[in-house]
Image (cartoon, rainbow, N blue to C red; front, side, top):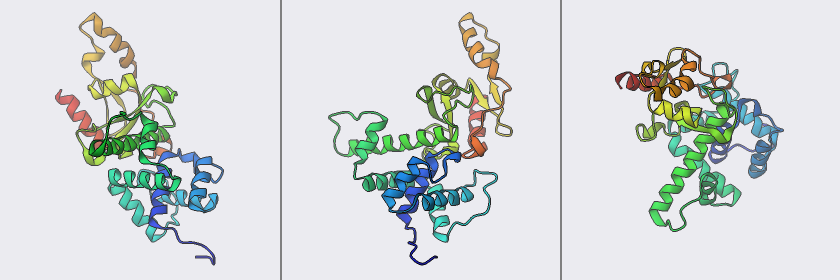
Length: 260
């Protein structure tokens, strides 16, 4: 370490990983306003924060070509801790971010959706936690897919959903895992939930259900027109394949679809 340099703390690294997840891969540079903001909060230079994010990219197992790593031992420890417990570390890092900005978690949660005015106590605390985590998940998925529907190519964030491959209720441990997420427009998100189409784990090719491709009723023809044209098309994958959908989650969805 050079003279005068300050070692990074675990809390600072959690904040850096939090930001790393929310930025598209091409935004990991010192001119990025969000990196500049975090550098001010941490009393560090934008260059040092940007370099730390690049170090995390070198540790990211979802990236196929991450390059050489200059990550420290603590970088690796905190990264592995975050990656092993998405739900716990996401909430902890969001709480740290709120404290550093001198705002409350309730204010962060309200950005996602206004909280009910009469909610109090434990119920309010639980709802705030869910909202904060959901907001992080959405930002991470939208960043990974560059605000683009991975089926249709629609680029309008207000019409997109950060959908889960394994639903929220089915897999608590992977609720915040970005490799369990897809950026979809609301219609195709619902169709995916219902098993009207699935994604092959081996090659990320879209498979539309036979009942949709060959409708037996006239009222199902619209669904065939909207979904059928994507049958056999490769999914639009995240830039640099960061947070690529986990084949195990896709296999789970495909198996459920085949059963149904």
